[in-house]
Length: 293
Image 1: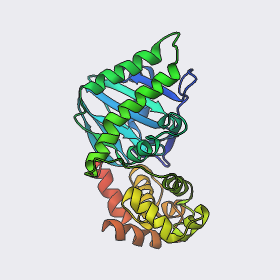
Image 2: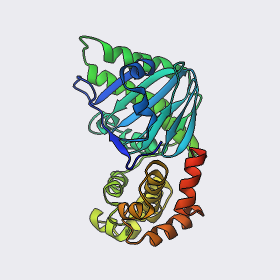
Image 3: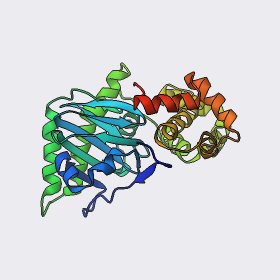
């Protein structure tokens, strides 16, 4: 289940004038090389996997998720995943780009959709009404001469996300009010994604965003419940775990890849956050296949 490096997979989104594709899982597996999706790969798009028949397993960032009817998996850009499917499983696979989170200017839900989607990986026992929404999405996308397709698909996708991901995240946060992530938080997330291998200094990120460290910490805590430093460390730790679990890179190479000057510094960082050495984590992930959630 490992490779020298983690392969990346992009989506062409099909021939439609919208960054969206939907497949029935059984047809998808018949069309594409099944074994390719049983190897860890990093996606360059967002994806929803909804199961309405059969059982299986799915691995997202070294964690194991059991699949059964009513399971919805939410994968964000740059996550590493792979399937363990069988011929009895079916449902829907959706790939889409970030622009579909929004329905245009003055969108009161865009930031909440983005925030919730980034924090939810798996929802079990979805409301049965979700199945009809996926079927309608598939039908609309498959029409040979659709009218208003882009807006209908966008609207249906947002309904699916609001009924599942946003509701789940609100309940998990034990709130009934809107969990609105502001533009600064989204900017911080994007900066972390592009710069966490270069810098883990909160001051550096604050300066690039035109904010003080105190202001940036408030943005992080208001939207994620973590300090800015905790968010940076969390992203670094996630990448370390991905590379340890899914690649054959040496410990020294992984340290260099993630911005540590010395492998010993990376080992101290990893042990501080996990109470394990990188080698111990790698051994456990290889023998247990996945670390429990």
